[in-house]
Image (cartoon, rainbow, N blue to C red; front, side):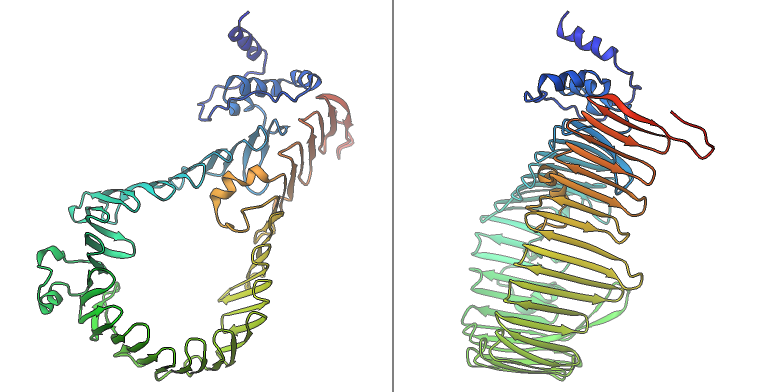
Length: 555
């Protein structure tokens, strides 16, 4: 009998599995050679474990192999169980090296730490991670993006006008975009020549032999600069670009000329620069006319002398003069501030708008502020306490102990840290309901989360989670590798689960049931209202029936 015939014969002896569309990814591997012969004999005595073994040996679909079992544990070899904190199920195999999870509309398939795939049909989104963050793919509806270590990327989708576009980047050498709207097309070969649109925090960038010539445009609705010569008169430039701010840089950043709606300026850095903007108006998104303040700015021998006036046309214009390092002065209807020996000298501030008086001597080492809008006591690096209407911060020996608090409307958020990330505790409290969401990290030992409904999750170990607490990719690709202990409690359903060494031990509880598994499932126990059962080497060795409320005995 050959290998294929033997495999077919074994599979025919198992419980039949209903034929379904196979959407799982096969796992290939070899049963660990460290399993002693008596474990292999025990595995052969149970049909479910035998099916899993053959699936891993011959590359058969793992999900179909145990589809008939709603719950099964032979960890860390393989396990299937219901999720504790949400509706769904999870299959794990070969310790931390594979899991397949279905939670609501979201399906996750992963081979930590090498690969993971998440798909949500309801949200029409999916993500791929290959050796995260080396290679990733993200899609939401028609929008998508591939990236290789943030240097090579492909992206595409539709804009608000439902026009398709595709972009390619080989950072920082080549940039390209193609769109159904030709005005959105661009190509750039850095530093030779090119054009960018909506990149690097600018609406438009044109360059030739960077840094010899660079033109940047801020805001939307940009008029092409190529329609006019580089040395056109300033007045004609202003007329051509009403509503935009266009800057021409020659031998960047030393010389530039800037034009816009009521704006003009130039600089020969670091020797001299000047810029003036008139008060202008624009129509906002609600269709109303909105006033845009003007300004006057000038510097000589940057950064030693500045003369700046901001907020022209408003009820609080600010005028500032700076003579570094000797003197700095700011005057406005709402705020006066004077510095001697700036930036590390004495600064005296009277803020009438926020209602506080502050003395820094020298800033930022020693700070004293008093008033309705602010209270501060700081002696750096020994101690600091600062509060205002919506936030507060305290620290001792700077990085040794730090506490921050933010209060806005119905949310009160507090974070306490020791040695920056060694210990961190964050609590977000809904002041209307009194419920709180909490997170505690002790690097690199553990991380614990508690949701607003009281449900919690505890994980040992956590070398990356304290630094990247909001990263779902870290949680998918790396947390399973080093989470040797997991404990989850659902306060809504009153269910809980515990897992040690990737289900080498696993225990689960509900209000009516209790079950556990140890050492590849060689020892198992379960308890339910109807009966109790215990297995050793998959052989029932104890248990019995219980008497129900009617007085009848059930087996």
